[in-house]
Image (tube, rainbow, N blue to C red; front, side):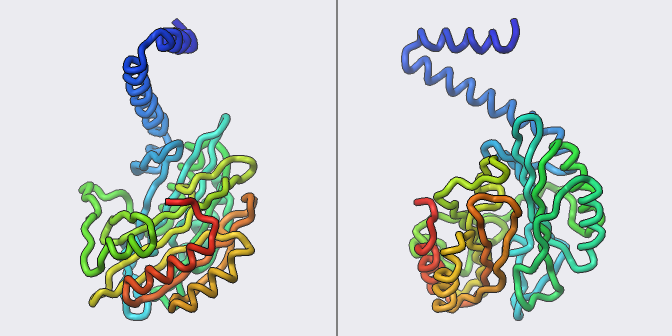
Length: 309
């Protein structure tokens, strides 16, 4: 029987079921669909040379720069705070979209850029996110469409020209323990739940609007959600960084709120080229009492059209 005929038969039988029976069928077919979805991404994972994480209809790769030892004003920053390269793929009719952010040293910019463009990957931005870090770190944003495997191959080959580490051969899981700051107090101040990974307390805040690029919906997992990260630095203090995703009319009110609460704005720029509505990305930094900083971040968040928790 053809696949389309098989699904028609399943749906016909489902209509004859009781509600409990239908729920069971949906659970089974949903699980099967999830397995099919994960297996469909296998060629992309093979091309990237590392496993990815399936997040809805997106496959996201994390590539932390664990090789870099970066100091910001006397604070050694962990990879998860501001050194996390990533690439996210979303399939569409006949091809795919990829977006990402590659963390690079100054000498890596040119060879990586050249290799990406040779492979058909478009560059959307190159800039700083931090100020005063040593060694100097730059961020190369990519946004492209095409064959998913070919794009993954191009990204893999470009990163091979940098010192970006490969996947952890030992498969060591990142620590989900947090010490030195009060997670619950921070979550209460922000009004949202965070996740701990690699010693970093991270918050993702999606916008309420639908974001599109070339008429394709871009989910928050592809870099269009506000990101806030906390790293404990001792005595109840934390270093914070990340980026607010903003409409033009929100830029100056958010900047003012951050600065009034002792949070420095370190960069303001675009990450994409053809998104709708037009977005601006505001990066920030502070190292102070974690609870105080959380309240300052909340004051800024309240000035944005962010989705409700």
